[in-house]
Length: 305
Image (cartoon, rainbow, N blue to C red; front, side, top):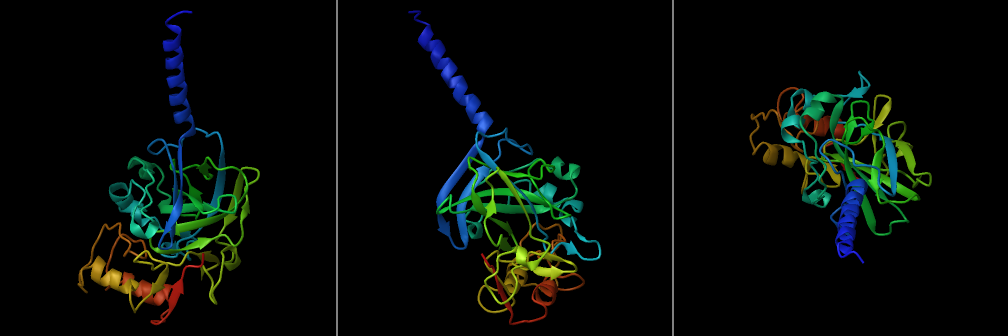
């Protein structure tokens, strides 16, 4: 036997392993929970680029509106966070690595130029996949939502959000945002063919509901995720313990009534205009009380998942 043959075989084996790693990308599935958030992730391989096709995956196409950014007169959301270059400066990496989202460890990130190339992007969202086929497991991806509500992947173009290492089956889809109440499909979607789609914006019945009020809120002729969740928990409220007004006034603004913070990527910016303030036109406190809560100071809305 040629004595060099084992060495050659070893090199070929190492090369093959490296090749498979590059092709499949990395998917992490984790069991366990933290308050209101399950754990798991799917990671892209490149900055602002999609990973190569995995050996097994499902894809989701979806549409959702954020009440904080939605303009009924235009029928689309605003993109102030890009116009003011806030995403370019402060949000090139997914923003969900915080306790209220289970310290999601996903490595999703893009270069600032991506936002210049795709100014229709509004913000980052979290897309979650759960179901009987994955008992006790949640698979998660960070992605973007555009002005028209369509979800897109990290290239700013692809409208199918890919979940690697997940086979076909029936799965619920949950959409989360850092200061809006999350929504979930009312029933599992059929991913048997490898892909499925869902539009949360067309009717209240497009989101799961277990309260006397709807999970989404009607804005003009569409339905949107409820804004105002300034402390990123599972409810909206203006008073009482852990209320959102306190996060805006005392955390976001340090207790100052007159202070206006500009160019902010902050959960207290509940109307997503890049400012945190509690006085003057378009202030966040007014939006929370009179828009998100409909002027009802004692109202509490909870996530319906």
